[in-house]
Amino acid sequence: MATSTVQTVADRIRGGTANDRMARLRDLPAIAIRRVDEAALLRVLTDPDFIEAKIDANLAEELLDNLQSAYLALKERSESSARVFLARHLDLLAQGERTPGMLFTLDYLDSRMSYRYSRQFYTDLLVEAATGMWQPSSDTDAHTFVRKCQGFFANLSRRRGDLAAARQYLPGIIEHLAAVGNLKSLATFEYEMATTFLRLGDLRRAIDLFQRSAQHAKDAADEIGEWISRCLEFRVRFLDDRKTAEDFQAVLGEAQKVFNRIAQVSALDSRAHNRAESWLMSVNLHLFEIAFSKADIAVADAVIHELRRDRWLKSNNRDVLLLMCEARLAILKGQWREAIAWFARYLDMDLPGWGERNASFVIWALERHEIAEDYLFLGNSFAAMNEEENAQKSWRRGLECPDENGNGMIKPRIRSCLRSTG
Image (cartoon, rainbow, N blue to C red; front, side, top):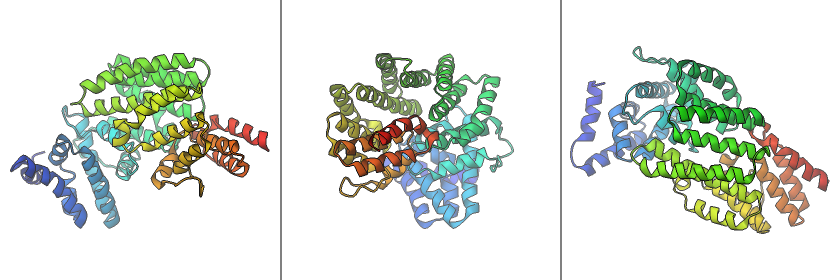
């Protein structure tokens, strides 16, 4: 790794005071991006010492912004340079899979980039590996790494509501990981396959795979993974009327204790910390879901108070999840106009006079699983105000949502509303 190029970059970021080093970590990529200096972008932002130093300096989010901006600038200027940029990062990430202590790994990148609105760099990176376009360096054992990229690409596609990649890649990945005995990764991709079945409305197979995922995570001493899968298993059982709200709530309570403990002790392990914090937020979302199902305004109010100050939501620009809860809380309180105003901010409908739409939120909501339920509730809110035309419009927009993103489970309820008012 100690080439003259690496040494040059390393020397530039190691000299001087701490403030000097911090300034260089920020300025080197910023200047190169502003100038679209292809050589500098490839030299600095694919340099392992620079990347590791930037993460170690708590500039991880800025690094990810740098990678996204640099990639888009290179892609606009030169497709071949953009491909080189991707290939060098794939080589680095493949190296990180077999180098203990490296911060810049595929797991790390996925935990940070998969939740972002702007993630073309990461999406194209995974596509490059998953589809065989990447040619690894001669000393790289890439087979398992490529499988992992395919799995993460399937996960990313699933988050966008596209299940084709999950169906294409996940069965083979699960079979491979079971054969080699990699239980931690096996648990991860069983979880992804379970989530895919949930989106398809196949609740029985989703439950089975969430159970297997939880057990394999437990066997691999992945406590976070175990309890994530247990939470989702019980959510599906709750949706399928196999478990009560109290059963689901009890599991969420146990999971919350685990995630709290790990979040407090894992500050030096950024991926574990981020994962635990994201699921502390998710537990609260599910607790709100239960409170809403029981029309328990007091509990819903208490949970939404926690969500309003949630650190993970703020740091990952996921305020739209809070808007979804605010709209539902307004419904519980019979505040129909307020509910419509919340829905109007993120749903893909033109509602002049009812609320101001946020374009970023709308883009995110288009990919959100079970988003048809929000159109159902929006229509119900209009109906409660005797706005029948807008109610019908909202329900029909819900029926346009793709079935393969959990919306198929919602549509019978929408059709029932349309029949009852038609």
